[in-house]
Length: 438
Image (cartoon, rainbow, N blue to C red; front, side, top):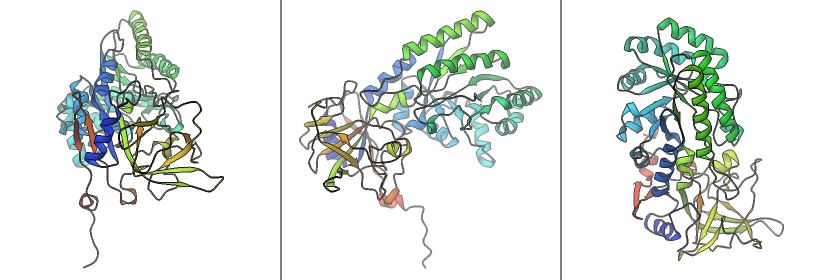
């Protein structure tokens, strides 16, 4: 049996077994790779200490959180419900930071305050959030974090740029004076300053963010003891892409923090929040070919799989590319993005079964189906979509057309497949609906 790519510990037999035992579509995650990426981030160069927080919005299944936490990573949560899920996965609140657009009120506000008392770090992201938390934080002597909107950002696409004027994450620099005034009035201390400029963007912009952020800390936050440089570490899903150089980025951050210490006498601890870097290439979506079509002599070849946008919406949302692996029913690797012969002429578009023209796994930036070179599979063979460990099961419209949420499997360190989420049932799909017919 063949391995799918140079960085995977899995071979084709795992996916044949997953399909046979659990049906398709089904997600498969590589535990060996998850742990390896966790260890790589924890070894990132730093001068005065490093906390790595996993951005759980990338993939939030309980077992995945537990594996990652067991490797010494803390959690970056983007909603109160994510905090609740992390706690239900036996992760202590003291190991979680909440960075959210939400403004919890009522019972949610009471629970938030309880969690903060238990150690949850609250990352203030707006003047409204600061105003609402200030009295509680002052009374309880809570040290806060603050997310700054720097006015500049980067990302693989405009929708993943979280730092420029077209996004609204964090307290904008133009509001910083008011935030500091309110904090000073209440006697509050910002222990940490956080800036996240986007996902999967230019590493050079990531370096520039470090310089920008340290300038903000020096000018406005004399009591801060740590800085979070956010996440967004670039991953390489396709063969021609380049992954972020953790060593080089860490070395740059280390040098800048050492310069800051020499200039100010302040040794700042460093934090990062990877999500995609940890999970993307550890995940695979396994689908079966249920049909093949061609749209006339001048048209396109289509391969219809039993999973599409409802298991991976990233091509539709972002024009993202994912590697395809075609595997025959006996486990033979028909073609791989990493081993395509240069003279292969067959091209096809892989689509799903949703009633939506955008339900394709290869689209250009205008949303038009884009054929890709691949082998020639048969009905019943498998299409395995790589790079689906992050922002796929967690954010896809899995109930569109009343399709059921796919199960998830963990290929563990011993090579065994363990089910970490069962397939949704029809009863679960309609459980919250109510009839008006009496």
